[in-house]
Image (tube, rainbow, N blue to C red; front, side):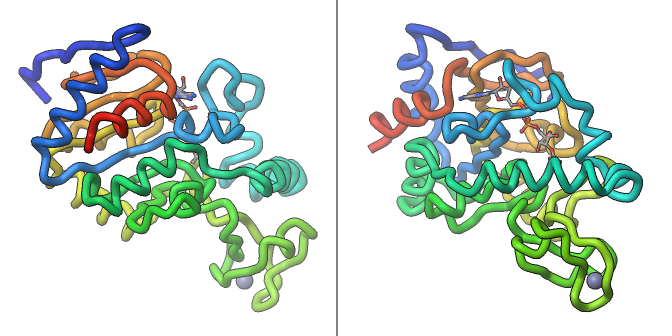
Length: 252
Ligand code: OAD
Ligand code: ZN
């Protein structure tokens, strides 16, 4: 937003100080929304995309996770998503996810908009979750959208309604985001008093526009600073779980 003053950045020893200030903003806010990215899930052992050990550091997403790769190289597409689905089989939410679920139950946050396809926010108990990039475990037919079982995708079965190829219900590079989910998230973020952004490089459009449309204060919680053309009111640089634990300890 034009004219917005850059906020203070807290890191290292100062994370506790930052948490104290953010809790004040949370207490002043009647309407707080959270936006999460892959950095929210790395402490549950799911790799992110652009962090230090991110998936896209050794792999071109256009080759494995784009709508073109689905049509042009289904073998590779299938191999990539099968490996990701199998990796997710045993994962569990971490303390940070559970803290966000408690925040929703207590009315401290209203909803979570997430770029993550892991389903961990639901698993932790959050009810109002906008999965902007879909959910990897919800398999569907690419042609007719008919839902299918996860095991059918893994065993390379085709759609039992129209015979076409199956795919995970995620947004692929080159595809638009689901309109209905987007509209709900946009509405909440537009009206919020405080938007807390957690664990995202903010490199992917259009979700990276959300901090700009938030009318209220904005906070950025990530283990590295990223260059982005929005001045957050506060930045806390550290691990998502630890920062959420610090917030949780002070919010009551
Ligand atoms: P990225 O991998 O781009 O960014 C994750 C950010 O989280 C990085 O800045 C990391 O440094 C940071 N991070 C990692 N671990 C963290 C931790 N424990 N605590 C705090 N921060 C941590 O992931 P996203 O921004 O979510 O798209 O990526 C956006 C989209 O790009 C994804 O949804 C995916 C990808 O291609 C689709 O699948 C459509
Ligand atoms: Zn079909």
